[in-house]
Amino acid sequence: MRVDYRIERPVALAASFEVEGFTVLLGASGEGKTLLLRAIAGLLPARGKPFDGLPPQRRAVGYLPQGHALFPHLNAWQNVAFALRGADRRRQAVEWLDRVGLAALAERRPAQLSGGQQQRVALARALARQPRLLLLDEPTSALDPATRDDVLAELIAEVHAAGIPALAVSHDPALAAVADRLVVMHDRRIVQAGTPAALHARPANGAVARLLGHRNVHRGRLLGKPDAQRLLWPDAKMAVPVATGLPDDTVVDWHIAPEAIELHEACAAGATDTDGLVAATVEVRQAGEHGGYVGLRCGQARLWAKSPSSHVTADDVRLRLPPLAIRCWPRD
Amino acid sequence: MRPRLTTFAAALALLLLAAPFAGLAIATDWRHPGFAHGDGGAVAVSLGLSLVALLLIVALGTPLAWWLARHRVRGQWLIDALLLLSLLTPPLAMGLLLATMYGPYGPAGQLLERAGLLLTNSAPAFVMAQFYAALPYYVLAARAAFEGVPRELEQIALTLGHSPARSFFHVSLPLAKLGLAAAVALAWVRALGEFGVVLIVAYYPQGIPVKLWVNLQDIGLSAVYPLLWVFFLVALPLPLALGLAVRRRLA
Image: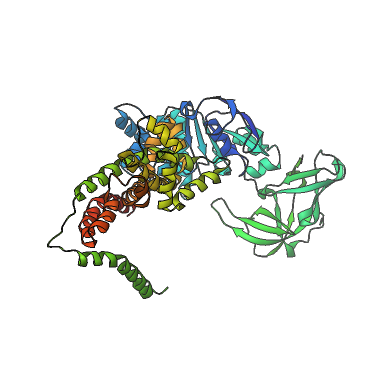
């Protein structure tokens, strides 16, 4: 489904993109993502397709705002039944709750449900309305970190099972990673769209890379012609060799994957080629399921590097940033 | 404040509140209650006409309160000032203003009288006096009640296919219920106990507050107490029950 909306107030915003399966609109806070959802739901004066000009009650959308907005004076099944008509409402409502695995909690009030359960009741209520489009506002924001991956997987499975296109707006890279399709918004316009894999492989610019959760995205300036180019990194007050096709003096956002950074303990730095070796201090050591990372202070800036298999004990280290591992995007 | 000091202050406040009623209990001649002529009629007038006034206040005040809670317009302060003005005006002065406007020589009064509605010393005048005395209190309390309803829930009701009217009756109203109950109780107490406004525009028919005054003038204090007891008996149940319901729900 094609979404094409233009908002004038309270901020000017235009967005046009395709919603397929579970689509995530990724953008920083303050981009107007919630406004866009509210505009599509008809809760904000705006023009655009689908549903142009219809009052909210005649738009076939299932809107799940942040915090889920369950009616506190109604229990779970009554919340779902709110979207239904007719004498058979109760049975249908319990059926919808059953689909999201909550039939046993049909008599509970929203306050007696966990965040994830509330979200599923809200989803059941939105689906019961038989929408043509689901709208989800920051669906991961209220979830408990320990269970959120499972809750998220369940949410997406339910959206797929319902067969209704869903548009989730978020600034959460973890949600973006599990989308069928990803649309990235920056400076109130769409800057890139595609599958998460394609976007992770080739972010269109530094802002997209940051939103995708890439670490080590910094500003810099290129010095010299493409064949003998250096990247000046003002925050760290240093320059490293780099290989790009961009002209001299281009202001860039640049990125290097933590895995690509070579880490040397300072005392062992007897290498003959000292060019491009960066002095850094270990600020934090991060242990995780997929190996460790270290947060390194370089001047005013921070770089994250994958910990080598041998544990880094020294606090002062030297880094090598392989020129081919550095990706540069010219800034507009 | 130290806990013991708080308890002492609270007990003192309660004691002060109770003092006049203790006085009433002592002063009442329990063996010979001695109702004055017309006391029964005053009770009927007060109860019946206050109920009518209360219905009017709720019917007209609720939409206004909801509108005020949900809309911001330019010159909003004028509306706020108008509500405050109605609260602020001394009851006697409000009675005089009503007489000026709706009395036999008032611009609205003359028009309405031609239409058959006499707003001086009549049942409609009595209701009008109570309406003016209690409406601003009801509107302010009801507005606060509606302001406590998250707007998002009303909007969600719309996205679920309900009309604004259904959204109001099924979401806004139930969620504002407790605050509205308090507002109704407040309006009832204000309307029933009103003396100043009623005295000017509706000396007749006599409700309890005016009859208390008349009994005092004609007979003396002993004729005030029995009617006052009856007043408490008929006036208290509604706000007390509403208040208890609110407290139970909050607990």
